Amino acid sequence: MVFIFGFTTSRHDSLRETAWLDGLRGVAAFLVMVYPPYGAPKTSPWEFWRLPYLRIIWCSGHTQVGIFFVLSGFVLSWSSLSSIREGRHEKFSLSLSSSVFRRWMRLFVPCFLIGILSLVQFYAGLIDLPMTRQNTFLAQLIDYIWESERFANPFQLERTGFDVFHKYNNTMWTMPVEWAGSLAVFLVLLMVSRIRSYTKRTIILVTIPAYCCLSAKWNYWLFTTGIFLADYVKQAGGFEQLSDRMSRHSRNFWILILLLGGWLGGIPQQRDWYERPGYEWTDKLIPKNWKDIEGGSRFLWCWSGIMIIWGSSHFATIRHFFERPSCRYLGKISFMLYLTHRMIGTIVGYWIRKQFANALGTPYISPEKPDVELMVIRGVFLNVFVYLVDWACMLPLALALANWSTILVDEPSVRFAKWVDDIFVSGGTLDPEPRAA
Image 1 (cartoon, one colour):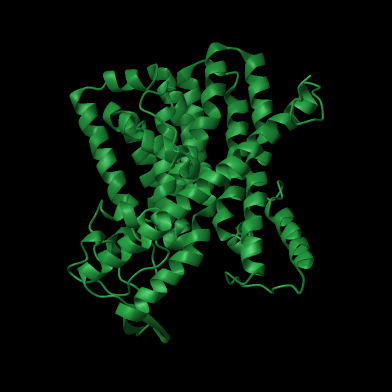
Image 2 (cartoon, rainbow, N blue to C red):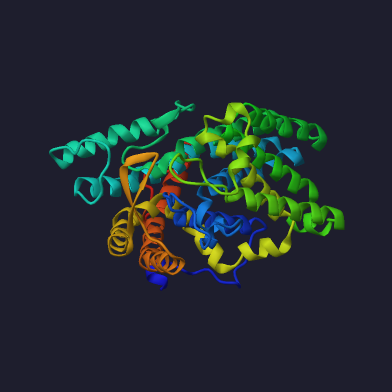
């Protein structure tokens, strides 16, 4: 178990104050993994998984991305805000410069290495991608390198349409968005670094995400909201103090925020070919300038991610849940679990679903798309059975792949970024691994 899956976390581990955020990130990555990129065209009364809150398990992948981005803004600013609040400007500048220097490597070096797996899968014919397969592996590798250079261009911050995707691995689309959001966090921190007053700093930290929301800059909205939340928790004295100071009315308020955030988290994306019973009316809540962003649903998913994190921050019971060893284990492998989960799904999962659909499904043709024939599995028992068998086969493979990718790719990438930082700043040696005397 330990060798294959890397499960070494324990309830006796010494935990940081923000350890629960690692667990939350891990659960969010897990929910992205189980989020099916498809939907049923028609709704039946027995489909209990379409109910609010239950939908979070099957239908909240987009909301979890929002949680990722708020958490990134929070974590990137947590240490720097301590230095700002204490007036330790030299420590702040050293910390911020190190973060800026290493951030690009932290995001894109693992993507380049993981993408090679997709390259091999594509060239071997295990997966199909909308591009030409080259005659030789060397030619395919050169094409991959050029695509990776385009994808990781640090100066292309505003991307539209398919510019955000890596053509060998679409799952990586959040990395350029993460990079742009990270730069926004660093810039805002630099902007408020001289402001010691919490009230004055709050004016800035509220105005910026509010402007981003109104102008439909959803990634900047989420990242800068993370800064605001981090400063809010710092001002309260920490998460425990935040919980202890709640009155009965404020407790009820944050419970309501959590419930609303959970309900919004299950809103399905607008598509022409399947129904969204009980959710169509939410389209009226979407501002006009958000309509072109995934049909406007991204606006509601962003609110869901913000509400879930802000609400959870106030309740010790929720924080303790995410501090459980299983959640922290998912947090440890969360980056690689996110980047690699479709590699299992597109090979093993697709084959399993195809066999079940052929054996148990019935043909269905949507009036909106008469040229597309779908195989629909009907009945609550068969749907649950197929889903559970599918994941019983895929989950161990996905966890094992994420664990070994963490060991062989993610952790060395972190050490590599730190080594490069030391070379240019501290005058270290060019040998990334110290040698014994």
